Image 1 (cartoon, rainbow, N blue to C red):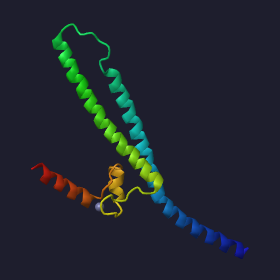
Image 2 (image 1 turned 90 degrees about the vertical axis):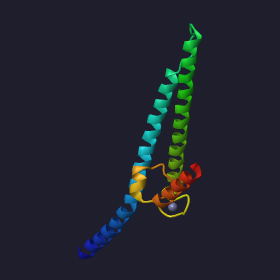
Image 3 (image 1 turned 45 degrees about the horizontal axis):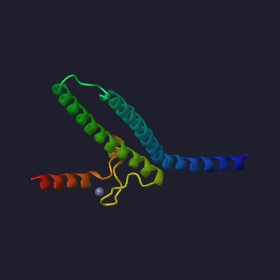
Length: 141
Ligand SMILES: [Zn+2]
């Protein structure tokens, strides 16, 4: 009986270790779920925006037509941004599936999990992102 008990304890200790590993995995799964939800929301928004686009409407005068064209180009720009974000989300999901998620594109270091949770589409650690933003600011000047 005593022997059986000790085996049980050993198993328990092993299980504890597994739990600690899967905690990170669990977070990754949560992030992935969040990304998929974001993707779905983005797609339905894009479809909604598309449906709102003026289609085969005959405008009574040139004035109205001009303003309609401004609206349309604005919508297209909006969809372009949505497309860009959609690609970022898809890339992040891909990285999770390939086990590359959370690794900085620039320095190859692990990105802080809190940063990933707040901004899962990020591909850079905070240090590299700050550096890149400063470089972009310099280029704009
Ligand atoms: Zn980095």
